Length: 173
Image 1 (cartoon, rainbow, N blue to C red):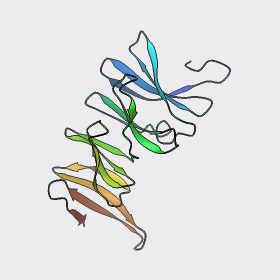
Image 2 (cartoon, helix red, strand yellow; image 1 turned 180 degrees about the vertical axis):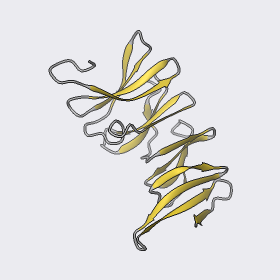
Image 3 (spheres, rainbow, N blue to C red; image 1 turned 90 degrees about the horizontal axis):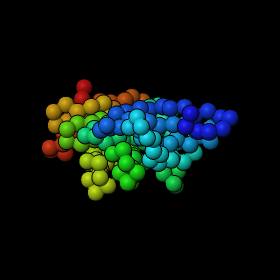
Image 4 (cartoon, one colour; image 1 turned 45 degrees about the horizontal axis):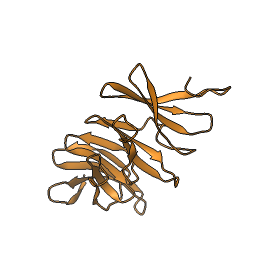
């Protein structure tokens, strides 16, 4: 048990990164900790603030190119996209809020409050591609990101694509 005392802790998200296992633990104080172990030693990488959402509760994480990505609350209680290479120094916020993520060889694509975004795992390499409403990023087909958007004025959701080359959005029928 990671948390000592009468209350128990529970391991949630788990992912292999390099020769280590990264895993999240929800503590009795409703904090979510990100831990790393190589099977011999265990190290606490970071602790999220109380009432973290999306980090543990829905097991929302992505692993790509040896990096672990997850949504966590920062010190201001804002949901941000964090990344970790399995070290304390390599675990930090990418300074942008994120919804679901899709990993591809050219980056991690995700939707944020700003629209469709991409990251290469660095703060400098994290950017918004287009400011548009996105409810769920479904995936990538060739050079196009496919996503759902809700249109409350019409009362329907629509399927759309964003072309990474031309920068155009198309409503798919």
